[in-house]
Image (cartoon, rainbow, N blue to C red; front, side, top):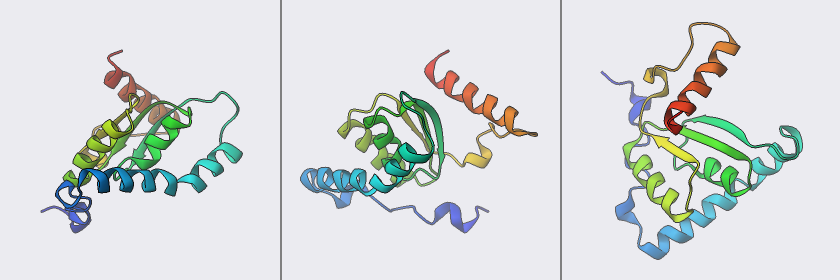
Length: 137
């Protein structure tokens, strides 16, 4: 039996609830809502010219990854989200923002087979390998 948290967001951001205009407005609001996160990342995490490889666990509609891409801070990004409705929304959101560097995966990250059995460097290597496989390298 699935843990109830794996179903908690199912139905959230169901595309049937949005007209085309409402969808665009909602997406733009979501992109603006991560401004404080972008500001923090720019001030405390990165250096000039940085383009990172990011895996976001519980990415929801992908707003942070899409905004990182818009800001020129993302080389590649993968978002893991268990809610199918949010993944479907994220795919339409991806098209709306013309994202070329983000992939949203409808899967439980803990079951995705990329977690290491050991230390941090193995984890980083496996994440990079996952990104490389996605990119066809």
